[in-house]
Image (cartoon, rainbow, N blue to C red; front, side, top):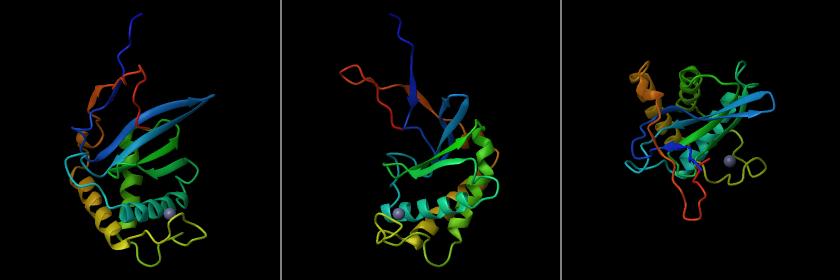
Length: 175
Ligand SMILES: [Zn+2]
């Protein structure tokens, strides 16, 4: 039996950006998962959980109220490694097509003032774990990075590595 090489992301080489993570077909519909990466995995500190949580709430609020994107968004949520987020959208846009809405969402987060939306025990699983000042700081850093690298392939090209095989023959997937 011939093994078809499978590739996963080389986390030692990822830099911040917006990357196509996977494309899935559900019946006749296509959905695309993007890796919205804010930090270099394993090479710089990840994001504080409370700041990550607040960014999750603010970006979700922005996207779910956005005239164009509210109907295309399926899912928005943080990665367990706290270096970025996943966004799942309808269709198969290019990573570079996601740039404007990601930039807008994080700009909104970087400038947000007031109560964090949904940070109440009724609406959130850990309503005390929020940090708006750090969320704003991290979002602003990402906005600057996206602006400084506008139009560069570095923002959209995923470094690939051969997929990890586990001892029992299973393959490792991170999402
Ligand atoms: Zn929450």
